[in-house]
Image (cartoon, rainbow, N blue to C red; front, side, top):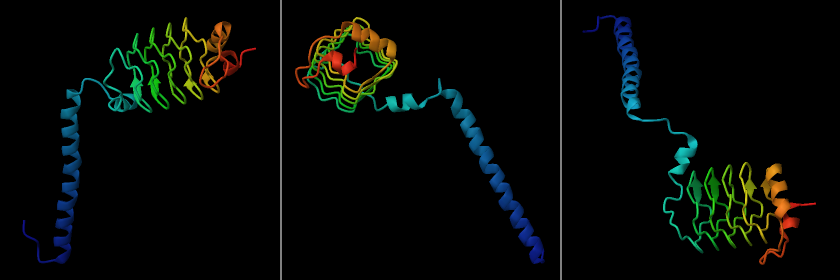
Length: 182
């Protein structure tokens, strides 16, 4: 379409073409998104995105490994040998550690939200400044474990105090004292 001799008409026509292109672009983007969305089986949430960086190479024997600041999200660590490992600053959220061997492991400043340590061997381990909210320790062996300044749910704390004994060989702190047992 040719512009009329009037400058006003040419400007108006150019403005209409410009506006039309800005209407078409969002519609195209919407159609592309609508086509791709059904291909995804489920929504990806923040923990799953973080899980892409999570520890992938889990083996039955991880004894003595340096696992500082690693992420274990929804990890199955049941029965895994993690004795003498350095897990300081690790994130162990909603993970299964039933029957795991964590003897002498350093779990200082670990974040373990809603994880299961039931029946785990935690003897002489260190949970100094650990965040252990909603984690469970039923039947875990805790002789000599150091929980200094760890955040533990009150029911779990009471259950741990009922069987707390021993002194940590590295920190020299008694398990009862570290839990604040009375």
